[in-house]
Length: 344
Ligand SMILES: Nc1ncnc2c1ncn2[C@@H]1O[C@H](COP(=O)(O)OP(=O)(O)OP(=O)(O)O)[C@@H](O)[C@H]1O
Ligand SMILES: [Mg+2]
Image (cartoon, rainbow, N blue to C red; front, side, top):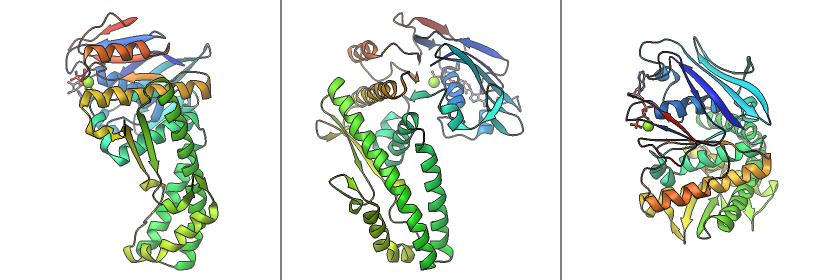
């Protein structure tokens, strides 16, 4: 898949309608600070996921002088062209070929993969950010994953409400039955994904990288074998404690991921080493995506040449597959096929 062009108006610094056209291969958007490079990637990302990669409200994405924004794009997939757009007018909506849709409708057709050079350092040391990253990865290759997560969240909301307001044991046991089902499915998918991505990384990019996934309770599994009865019995065993603390003690929203390089946590390495190795994980994911979906996602890399030395930047450039990449930088680089220059 690739994005052929995008038309943006009323969005951040892009007040008047502006069109950007991309090639199917390596694109670079370059320009000075504040010229709108990250904004273009943010608009593309918004089409895929209905939200920004930054922690902002939709209203904050409106240009200061505008009360509406429109983003409109042509996407090509298996030589078919279709249109994805997003608009914030009274409400926010996403459209696929003019029909209103949600992110699961978009995800089948357009999947932007985003690498942020401004927050990868904190991402590597944050449990919840790593969980979100790998959830997004799994969502890209397992259709049902986001549905399972949404249902899981509904169940934990209900269970938490009961724990806080009306800790009725019979009702809580009922929710635990439902919960166990989702915990089992999600944990299995996560284990399976991490096992596979580790193989891809170690065989092709770096033999010393290992992602470790640890579910919130080790009692759920025996040598990576998961059984519903085990999950149910762990949940039953912890219920009294949960009632006492009026909160959930275990669940997939508390699972832990950690990245290791030669057995040391990647968070202890230098910033360039972190970036290089995290990008290897992205590259391995792109291989998995290709093998599962027989197509590439669209890779967005903000400030692609920050933090890494010239040698590592070039190593990475040589490893990117023949897919659409839209990178940004404050510098031009002749290794890209299409160059988009922004002015401040
Ligand atoms: N809601 C908004 N309305 C108007 N301008 C905005 C809004 N939000 C952000 N901006 C401005 O848009 C400009 C573009 O921001 P952006 O982050 O895309 O720049 P950039 O080219 O990525 O810069 P850098 O090289 O520093 O990363 C900035 O000057 C920013 O202050
Ligand atoms: Mg930027």
